Amino acid sequence: MATLLSVNVGLPKDVRWHGRTVHTGAWKCPVDGPRTVRRLNIDGDGQGDLQGHGGEQRAVLVYQTQSYAYWRTFLERDDLEFGRFGENFTVDGLADDEVCIGDRYRIGEAEFEVTQPRVTCYRVGMRLNEPRMASLLVAHHRPGFYLRVITEGRVQAGDQITRTRTGKGALTVADTDALLYLPGADPAKLRAALSIEALSPGWQQSFQDMSRHLDEPPGPAPAVPGWRGFKQLRVSQVVPETPTVSSFYLQDADSQPLPPALPGQYLTVRIPREGRPSLVRSYSLSSAPGAAEYRISVKREDRGEASTYLHTHLSRGDVIEAAAPRGTFVLADDHTPVALFSAGIGATPVLAMLHQLARDHSSRAVWWVHTARDPGQHPFAEEARQLLARLPSARAFIYYTAPDLEIAGGPGITHGHMTSGAIRELGIPADAHAYLCGPAGFMSAVTSALRLTGLSSSNIHTEVFGALGAINPGITHPGTGHPHQPPGPQGTGACVTFARSGLTTRWSDRYATLLELAEACDIPTRWSCRTGVCHTCTTPLLTGQVQYTTQPLEDPASGEALPCCSIPTTDVLLDM
Image (cartoon, rainbow, N blue to C red; front, side):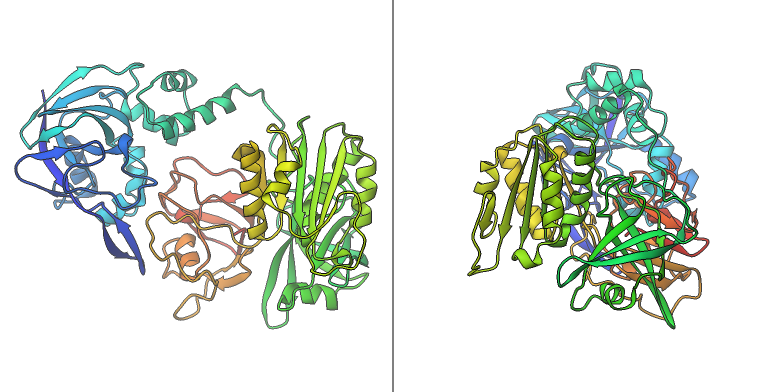
């Protein structure tokens, strides 16, 4: 019979780690005597990051003394006292490859139900001072598991553990964990997981997403970039669109056909600077997909070094370097209604989508909604009007925001800012796909309004230039948000360029991974496990090669890298 060996609790606290502060409840210590287990917590216990830990489905974390013995040998450690893995209950028995999701157990006065394996989290590695730990727990099939409290009551070390019900589906904790995190998911086990009502909602959603991918008929292979690295493109013409926006038409410098781009993709261009690292910037393609030439349309910003260079130095016949078109903000090839929202220069990617719809003579219902300051600063107004005229079910709505405009309005033209109420009045149906590009505040407001009209988040697509928003669970102060050279002496290794942040620096062995270098530069980063398990940090690798210091449990796709567990072996350009 299984036995509760130790009850461990700890309240969240701030812990210094890698120069930052982590708010975490991972520091658990054994307690004497009985403790009351309540719906959300054990008395005296708490979690720091309630997005990934805690709550009704994850009230109590369980780990086994047999796994402690395993890790003492594997890690050659003799300092692994109970609670060190962040667990609330240290138990004798209840192995991960025997306990099933939905099993219920009585311990002392309380009854519990198994809901999910442990979440892969960097904090267990932080607590153990073993960065690989999140990956090791999955790879060695020893994650531990969470309990939901069915009946509240007191428990204490020495209580016997009695199974009161066997979970439906007979899917063990270890198999459930492997199903989500390891490659080669077994469809039969996936179907079994979907039938288990006790499985926590978050894991149910993950498995539903996986199941949809398995059930979908094979689609076209993922788009492969038209070329690797950078190649030379020649400027064939420069066309002013407004006083601050110019379009640059580009063709292959060797007069070869250009690979077609998907509607909504972007080019990453490299701009030389004498005596300093090149500038790298990304610009949406505003040309029609399949056009003989690429077109990027660039707004000159007052303090924009790259945009100023393009406007003042680039002329017909000049050559620039560019990576192949890429990006996932692309028009879906289906028959649902489509709404294209843009503000200012954000019109560029959705204009390419409008070109595609017009070229296909699409019968889809189309909404074209654009915001500009005034007609003089409205790029592509006539081009968009002509394209819309070719679509039988298209309608256009233009908003001019400059005060005191002395121009006549017209059908679909509004003087003033677009409001949530105005978006609701557009009549966009709930099954439409919406594509948004513009300033962050604009996209946030439009997204909120579209959700109120009934569109699901999965049908709202946004394009963000500049760094993506950070995902740093538990970090209380994620950094300045202003990329800069790392502190200390300049590195002497490979050049590392963070394209979205516009920063190039040299690699230094002071850093264990590219992620750590990015953090030292205050590049916004996205991660969770930090060991190649969750793939939250997956980043397009535009040029160069990396080497993995901890082998990911599943390799990223071609052309992508996991900065959390890799270092550069050549000069690299990362889309972050």
